Amino acid sequence: MRVVAAVDKFRGTLDADGVAAAIAAACEAKGHECDRVPLADGGEGLLEAFGGATEWSTVTGPAGEPVRAGWYRSDTLTVIEMAQAAGLALAGGADVNRPEEATTAGVGELLLEAVRRGTSRIVVGMGGSATSDGGQGAVDVLESSGEIDALRAVDIVIACDVDTAFGDAGRVFGPQKGADAAAIERITGRLEALADTYRSTYGVDVTTMPGAGAAGGLAGGLAAATGATISSGFELVAGELGLAGLIDTADLVITGEGSLDPTSRNGKVVGGVLSMCSDRSVDVHAIAGIVRDVDWIPYTALVETFGEHRALTDTQACVVEATHRLLEARSSAAAPDQS
Image 1 (cartoon, one colour):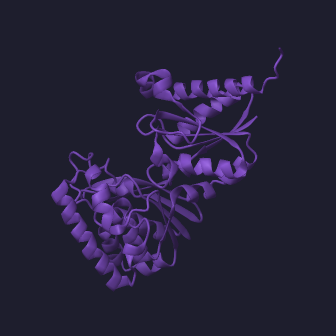
Image 2 (cartoon, helix red, strand yellow):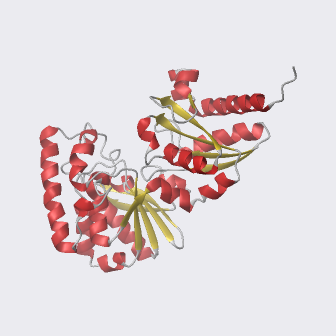
Image 3 (cartoon, rainbow, N blue to C red):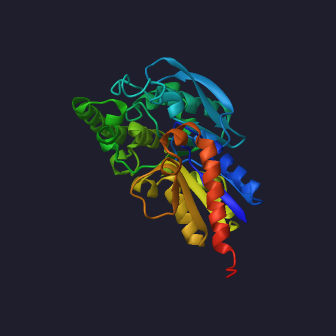
């Protein structure tokens, strides 16, 4: 049997490559072939999906401090995760983050570095941001550099997994970044004013762009200033990695993520993989840490199957065992009745 392991990370316990490796180990132990495809939906994990960081640059962090940011570079493609330069983790988490002050300046600095090194295509992943500045920090850096025309000559794609409007970024994402109700109202007012600025400066109405509110509005700011396009992160990554072709040759696809719930069906890895498999009539099964209110894909929940402690502390072994059980169940179902 040919299996494709097309998985997202299990946040906090196992990265996507580790999940795919665990599935592959179980498959190969049973004599099956397995293609490992670590995926991402545009947020954290995007670099990993392309093989990890190949370059490192010191840029301005979310609180204005220097941070070391990794990014990917090949002859024709650059991949940047905004969280590497302006992520909530860099700010110390929501409890200490200052979302009204956090800046995306470092993302602009990474874009400039990429252009200066030479590239024809840049993918910028949204997700995990500390910021709600509507991309102003990044745009200010690009404008002051005098090199924004060079950026506009590059094909820039913004990868995200949400369709949040620009003006809603504060209300939707503010609480998870540490903003209280009063701060959210101030952030919203600032985003509305910034949308007017982008409209008058660049002739672009970011309020009409689905997804422009991703990463606190960074998606809209970059789209306005550089002409970048906003795209589904999953579809972009799946296309770059040739996932469709691998599924075409598969007998079974195993997907998964750390927390599987109704939101996983739209714009996320599991939902995207399910759709591709359904289109091709290929069997699919999800392995996840925790599962809540899901009846649209067959699944194994590690917490339910192995207990919370083991699922969280020995995740890789749990994924291996869950895959073994899945393969054994399929073999038993396929075996001829000897009665």
